[in-house]
Length: 246
Image (cartoon, rainbow, N blue to C red):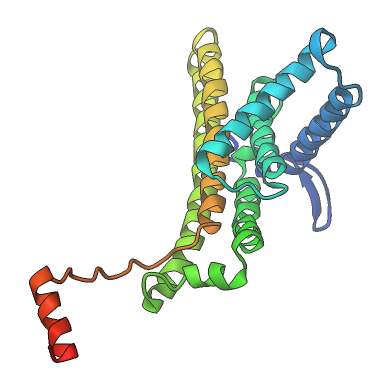
């Protein structure tokens, strides 16, 4: 039993090799590129709109609505970036029901690459919205002594992002393979249907977490100001009289 699609080698010449992760990643990218071109080359409105265009517009509208709920600031390019992440992960997990297809999201190298994209997107969008000075200043809040811990937090959440997606997809694939050996008739079909649901949920969670991290990078952390105690009216008048000598 293969734990990851990296173990399945299709072609190798010396150190160069093409495994299932690379092969199916390019297959999904070609599928998404060709599908988006076919749908968007003849856009229509009203009753002449095709079903695929309607489905794609619903997906874009849902992603846009989720972004509006997470952040009030939406820099240019954020919607295409998060939409591409969601569609890529969702299509990879959805095609797991096709015999012979091994989802690239079951490889730690793929999920690490996706998490690294989010890791670099956080400072890029954050600096683009609030500037370098304010973005770097967030790492010094609430005190400059928190700088190493804030930097460690950036790496730890990137690690959690890639391991969460890899672990869920790999475990779902392994459970389906085990049930296929034990009860090869009905149970694997039910597990495949459950795998479709969990695959879409994992794609949604990854995109939402990426949006939350990027949104947090665009926020400005302002230290809380100390409250000035109120001065009683009588005491204030006495101070004013003492100052004027009356």
